[in-house]
Length: 60
Picture: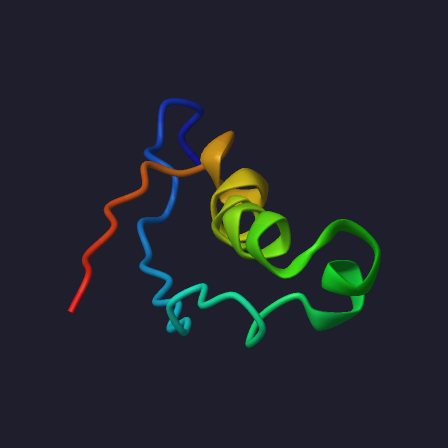
């Protein structure tokens, strides 16, 4: 096996609901508030992958 081989290329598709207050992170919202929890919800989608992948976010 060549040592300069390119790593495999793949795609990951993530579907998520818009972060509407009261509809996302409901357990967290009980302690910090619905609006604050909704503001934190998108961060959970970006943080795990951002250090390993280039993210392209499309909103429909």
